Image (cartoon, rainbow, N blue to C red; front, side, top):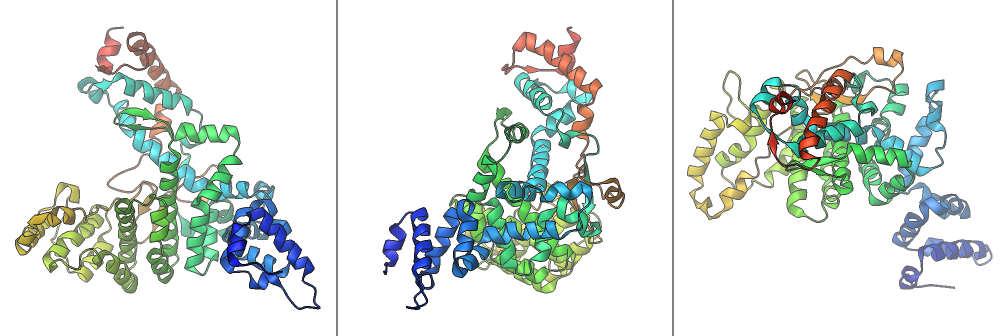
Length: 505
């Protein structure tokens, strides 16, 4: 029996898997024919990909060829690696639940994604509610500044719905240096970092990223999630757009978690000295970035260049000349038809941003490699336009008067501000802190995790939510909302002063 490739592709996935099993059983040694060996790899891969979770064990036991194909599958590389790590540890009693139920892929996905997911949710909640948190902590602002009532009410509703969530409790988070974590604590608390350590091929690391953030695994993880846990994520993931409440947007959250994972992988590769692997990872990352931007090339290019900026900063921090040259080459693809002055006007702001974050050593190294002019003393943030950048831009504009056809406007978009994510703390001495929830650590491990604190100058107050949720402050907020609700309900767009609202009652 011989089927064409076209016939193979026209079969249903499950039917084809049954056909494969039958062919293997009927391939007697007498005729020496094994039809699986003739099957195109793409077809075999697609079969296994579509039925992996339903028939994985059966396929693996059907034949040596199918077993080998299953073992090479990306899901197997990721999930199997994690299972092996967990079972290979001398687990304490506290960590034994880690290996219970590992036969369910969705549980493994949830464990692998847990830290980056909730770190992303926590940082996003700070971004979405931070202004109101600070407003409610500042009596001067409450007197001088009016707020739309619906914004105040939505802020209260968000705190009320998430009041007891572990991520908003006092001292629930800590910035730690990953190099201080021993492996027995690293695997259960930050399993992704442990997997990155174990994978010597950077393409396999990229494969892990795609598996964890791909639609198949994402859907499976969501389906296998307890209803209460999904409600928790939905409540934490509420945001605001132009001051209006917006419910959790799955695609947006998935993209943000993807970005978090990418940054964590880059940091881990940097702090373990794997800059050759970082180069390969970044150079091959673009298709994955594009997949998360649904074909929007402008957005995906911007996101990819933003990641490349971060790689440049890491390479400069550690003085890695070759890696810096590679990442600069990615940047230069956008600038290779500009004059040298215009190139500097686009590149050098990254140097000054690094200085603003206190990364002086890396900034000086980057300036020396790129030929950026430096002056003594402190630089202001690029968003405030340092005079030195103004001078560069003026010279560049004089060199490129022909750019008045609109190219100059596009050119300005190439200067992507470098912003260190709030879950990272890069230090001038090369230490990098990562914001992690520490409730899962035992007391002995906690004692070995010194808190590096938030990044400066944009200090990220991890206890801002906790302070507003303490009984006294929250009761005051409840009283305020009850007064406002009597006048405006929950949808009022009137702008009100907190001081005036309370003074009239």
